[in-house]
Length: 317
Image (cartoon, rainbow, N blue to C red; front, side, top):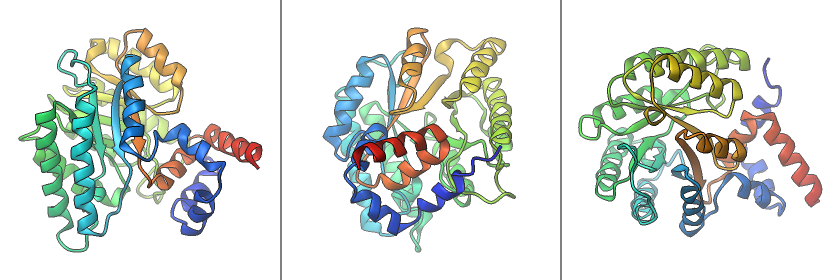
């Protein structure tokens, strides 16, 4: 069935009026701190150290997207450069060539949405970030955004992988094109983060029903698990997690040849259970002041998150 709240919440994600109302409301900060590590680099480094000490890997995202100012894109790149060196200082040793620390970045945050030369600016900035990451011993993954960016993003990553073969990319199972994209990218060495999808997309582009999205996810996961790349299973769905374990056994994948990924603040006990079962788990950890769009998409993904939000607002009123 279709979650009736999803389109309403996603519409709110682009409402500046609702954003102003929520960001000025004190109880909201408690919600934000559940899903966002904080607004500063010191905040996220504290969270990162705790997760790493608990046996989890991390992917850190400096929140921001749809940058339309070149100077802002350069500031974002500068923040990421500082971030990867700070993270490298708390990194445990890599296990079986898998780096425990990764940063996630949206190409629109690096300038892809600029009116003039956006693609070139984002590509140049991504190259600079990857080169810095090599020196620091950190990985990079390019986040998915709305469907209009999918083609140029995948093309940029594919071109960049000639020099940085470890560069990861996220694909979204609710897009109708993603099954074909998984077939194209499931080659040796590729790192593909498979998520369900979190943007408001038209029906001709994306599956709308939760059951359709789950079936698409499982089809895409089957392709990746039987391919030659490194699947990153970004899901909190118990059915998907169980299916991934079955597919790993069917494809003779060892525990270090794929990983589970979950969001910071979501299903912490399940993350710990998987780690205890010797499964590779990476936690997606966002930080920064531009948390509003990220938070609303998290609420749209899971009705349980909405209930948590409503309870916190009620208790804080």
